[in-house]
Length: 200
Image: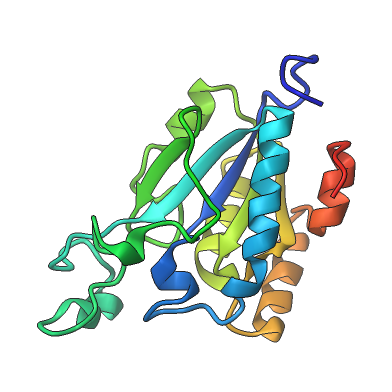
Protein backbone atom coordinates (compact mmCIF):
# COMPACT_ATOMS: atom_id res chain seq x y z
CA UNK A 1 0.00 0.00 0.00
CA UNK A 2 1.57 3.25 -1.09
CA UNK A 3 1.48 6.41 0.99
CA UNK A 4 -0.74 8.17 -1.52
CA UNK A 5 -3.26 5.32 -1.23
CA UNK A 6 -4.52 6.35 2.19
CA UNK A 7 -1.34 7.22 4.05
CA UNK A 8 -1.51 4.13 6.26
CA UNK A 9 2.22 4.25 6.94
CA UNK A 10 2.75 8.03 7.22
CA UNK A 11 3.46 7.75 10.97
CA UNK A 12 6.07 4.99 10.60
CA UNK A 13 9.82 5.32 10.11
CA UNK A 14 12.31 2.63 9.16
CA UNK A 15 15.67 3.13 10.87
CA UNK A 16 18.64 1.53 9.10
CA UNK A 17 21.48 1.52 11.61
CA UNK A 18 25.22 1.31 10.91
CA UNK A 19 25.01 -0.65 7.67
CA UNK A 20 28.43 0.69 6.74
CA UNK A 21 31.41 -1.04 5.21
CA UNK A 22 33.61 -0.88 8.32
CA UNK A 23 30.94 -2.68 10.35
CA UNK A 24 29.90 -5.24 7.74
CA UNK A 25 33.24 -6.23 6.20
CA UNK A 26 35.87 -3.96 7.74
CA UNK A 27 38.07 -3.74 10.83
CA UNK A 28 35.18 -3.89 13.33
CA UNK A 29 33.13 -6.37 11.34
CA UNK A 30 29.98 -7.74 12.97
CA UNK A 31 30.17 -11.42 12.06
CA UNK A 32 26.46 -11.75 11.37
CA UNK A 33 26.27 -8.51 9.42
CA UNK A 34 26.99 -9.70 5.89
CA UNK A 35 24.21 -12.29 6.03
CA UNK A 36 21.51 -9.69 6.69
CA UNK A 37 22.43 -7.31 3.87
CA UNK A 38 19.86 -8.76 1.41
CA UNK A 39 17.12 -8.54 4.05
CA UNK A 40 17.95 -4.93 4.88
CA UNK A 41 17.86 -4.11 1.16
CA UNK A 42 14.44 -5.76 0.96
CA UNK A 43 13.16 -3.93 4.04
CA UNK A 44 14.16 -0.61 2.48
CA UNK A 45 12.44 -1.57 -0.77
CA UNK A 46 9.24 -2.46 1.05
CA UNK A 47 9.40 0.75 3.09
CA UNK A 48 9.71 2.80 -0.09
CA UNK A 49 6.72 1.00 -1.63
CA UNK A 50 4.64 1.74 1.47
CA UNK A 51 5.66 5.38 1.78
CA UNK A 52 7.39 4.71 5.09
CA UNK A 53 9.96 7.34 6.13
CA UNK A 54 13.51 6.00 5.85
CA UNK A 55 16.15 7.24 8.28
CA UNK A 56 19.75 6.20 7.67
CA UNK A 57 21.55 6.20 11.01
CA UNK A 58 25.31 6.18 10.50
CA UNK A 59 28.50 6.76 12.39
CA UNK A 60 30.85 9.37 10.99
CA UNK A 61 33.71 10.15 13.33
CA UNK A 62 36.34 12.83 13.42
CA UNK A 63 39.49 11.32 11.79
CA UNK A 64 41.42 12.03 15.00
CA UNK A 65 38.85 10.17 17.07
CA UNK A 66 37.99 13.15 19.24
CA UNK A 67 34.27 12.33 19.23
CA UNK A 68 34.47 8.55 19.59
CA UNK A 69 33.88 6.49 22.76
CA UNK A 70 36.96 6.17 24.94
CA UNK A 71 37.13 2.40 24.51
CA UNK A 72 37.41 2.81 20.71
CA UNK A 73 40.01 5.57 20.58
CA UNK A 74 42.83 3.11 19.95
CA UNK A 75 41.42 2.73 16.41
CA UNK A 76 42.41 6.34 15.72
CA UNK A 77 46.05 6.33 16.80
CA UNK A 78 48.88 6.67 14.27
CA UNK A 79 48.94 3.88 11.73
CA UNK A 80 45.57 2.46 12.74
CA UNK A 81 42.41 2.17 10.65
CA UNK A 82 40.23 5.12 11.54
CA UNK A 83 36.89 3.33 11.84
CA UNK A 84 33.97 5.09 10.11
CA UNK A 85 35.88 8.33 9.92
CA UNK A 86 34.08 11.05 7.99
CA UNK A 87 34.70 10.83 4.24
CA UNK A 88 36.34 7.39 4.39
CA UNK A 89 35.35 4.36 2.31
CA UNK A 90 34.62 2.48 5.54
CA UNK A 91 31.96 5.03 6.50
CA UNK A 92 30.05 4.42 3.27
CA UNK A 93 26.93 2.27 3.17
CA UNK A 94 27.43 -1.30 1.98
CA UNK A 95 26.77 -2.03 -1.67
CA UNK A 96 23.07 -2.25 -2.46
CA UNK A 97 21.99 0.39 0.04
CA UNK A 98 21.50 3.90 -1.32
CA UNK A 99 20.24 7.09 0.32
CA UNK A 100 17.61 8.69 -1.92
CA UNK A 101 16.43 12.29 -1.99
CA UNK A 102 13.36 11.75 0.21
CA UNK A 103 15.33 9.81 2.84
CA UNK A 104 16.91 11.32 5.93
CA UNK A 105 20.49 10.79 7.06
CA UNK A 106 21.35 11.08 10.75
CA UNK A 107 24.90 10.96 12.11
CA UNK A 108 25.51 9.59 15.59
CA UNK A 109 28.66 9.05 17.63
CA UNK A 110 27.32 6.74 20.32
CA UNK A 111 25.31 3.50 20.45
CA UNK A 112 21.85 5.04 20.64
CA UNK A 113 20.55 6.93 17.63
CA UNK A 114 18.83 9.24 20.13
CA UNK A 115 21.81 10.17 22.32
CA UNK A 116 23.05 13.71 21.59
CA UNK A 117 21.26 13.80 18.22
CA UNK A 118 18.11 15.50 16.97
CA UNK A 119 16.44 12.21 15.96
CA UNK A 120 13.55 12.55 18.42
CA UNK A 121 12.85 16.11 17.27
CA UNK A 122 12.97 15.07 13.61
CA UNK A 123 10.57 12.18 14.18
CA UNK A 124 8.16 14.27 16.24
CA UNK A 125 8.01 17.11 13.74
CA UNK A 126 7.28 14.60 10.97
CA UNK A 127 4.48 12.93 12.91
CA UNK A 128 6.33 9.66 13.44
CA UNK A 129 4.91 7.55 16.27
CA UNK A 130 6.14 4.07 15.30
CA UNK A 131 9.60 2.76 14.46
CA UNK A 132 10.90 -0.25 12.58
CA UNK A 133 14.55 -1.07 13.27
CA UNK A 134 17.13 -2.84 11.08
CA UNK A 135 20.94 -2.99 11.05
CA UNK A 136 23.82 -3.82 13.40
CA UNK A 137 24.58 -4.71 15.95
CA UNK A 138 21.87 -6.14 18.17
CA UNK A 139 23.44 -5.79 21.66
CA UNK A 140 24.79 -2.31 21.07
CA UNK A 141 23.26 0.23 18.68
CA UNK A 142 20.06 -1.70 18.01
CA UNK A 143 19.32 -2.43 21.65
CA UNK A 144 20.21 1.02 22.94
CA UNK A 145 18.15 2.77 20.26
CA UNK A 146 15.19 0.46 20.93
CA UNK A 147 15.27 0.93 24.71
CA UNK A 148 15.45 4.70 24.28
CA UNK A 149 12.53 4.62 21.84
CA UNK A 150 10.43 2.63 24.31
CA UNK A 151 11.42 5.03 27.11
CA UNK A 152 10.24 7.95 24.98
CA UNK A 153 6.87 6.29 24.43
CA UNK A 154 6.92 5.59 20.72
CA UNK A 155 3.63 3.83 20.11
CA UNK A 156 5.03 0.80 18.32
CA UNK A 157 8.66 -0.30 18.16
CA UNK A 158 9.52 -3.19 15.85
CA UNK A 159 12.83 -4.98 15.35
CA UNK A 160 13.04 -7.16 12.24
CA UNK A 161 14.89 -10.15 13.64
CA UNK A 162 16.56 -11.33 10.43
CA UNK A 163 17.41 -7.81 9.28
CA UNK A 164 19.44 -7.20 12.46
CA UNK A 165 22.54 -9.09 13.57
CA UNK A 166 25.21 -9.57 16.21
CA UNK A 167 28.59 -11.29 16.50
CA UNK A 168 26.93 -14.63 17.28
CA UNK A 169 23.42 -16.07 16.94
CA UNK A 170 23.25 -16.60 20.73
CA UNK A 171 24.01 -12.95 21.47
CA UNK A 172 21.45 -11.88 18.88
CA UNK A 173 18.74 -14.18 20.25
CA UNK A 174 19.34 -13.14 23.87
CA UNK A 175 19.00 -9.45 23.01
CA UNK A 176 15.89 -10.01 20.88
CA UNK A 177 14.42 -11.85 23.89
CA UNK A 178 15.11 -8.86 26.15
CA UNK A 179 13.55 -6.42 23.69
CA UNK A 180 10.49 -8.61 23.22
CA UNK A 181 10.03 -8.57 27.01
CA UNK A 182 9.63 -4.77 27.00
CA UNK A 183 6.84 -4.89 24.42
CA UNK A 184 8.87 -4.64 21.22
CA UNK A 185 7.50 -6.51 18.19
CA UNK A 186 10.04 -8.98 16.77
CA UNK A 187 8.85 -10.29 13.38
CA UNK A 188 10.95 -11.86 10.69
CA UNK A 189 11.26 -9.95 7.43
CA UNK A 190 8.68 -12.22 5.83
CA UNK A 191 6.22 -11.62 8.67
CA UNK A 192 6.78 -7.87 8.51
CA UNK A 193 6.29 -7.83 4.74
CA UNK A 194 3.00 -9.66 5.13
CA UNK A 195 1.86 -7.05 7.64
CA UNK A 196 2.51 -4.34 5.06
CA UNK A 197 0.72 -6.35 2.37
CA UNK A 198 3.96 -6.62 0.39
CA UNK A 199 5.17 -9.88 -1.12
CA UNK A 200 8.68 -10.98 -0.19
